[in-house]
Image 1: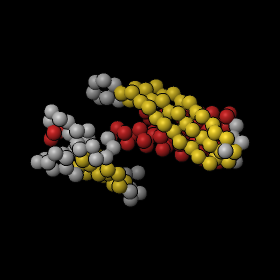
Image 2 (image 1 turned 60 degrees about the vertical axis):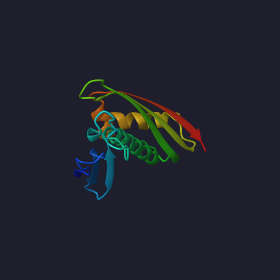
Image 3 (image 1 turned 90 degrees about the vertical axis):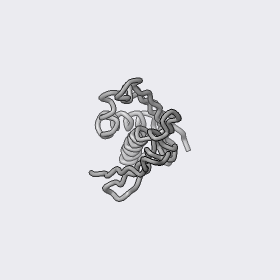
Length: 149
């Protein structure tokens, strides 16, 4: 796996902290820093997600992918799945994630709650590289809501 991240800003402009990531699979992801009123040259223009937001989003994508795949392999009729991640970060540098809560919403026909609980646990204990990596610094908790369709 590879990714090239390039600075898109110009030291003489107000958008000094924009970046574009080009992934090995051929996709592009924009990132930008938060505006800094005290030092505009050090901030972004809020034109894209922050780099740490992309880490959180990638983790959500990784675990949601696992949950859907595990449920489908169990022959459950999954129609929708989403996960809302809320996090806390350390106050001092490096501002690593210290707490992450993931709330899954799974919708489908006849899916037992035990199957959703098992899929989430398997993702976090075995399959989701991103959440397993983040668990080195963050306490990760989960909850879920099951909607019968």
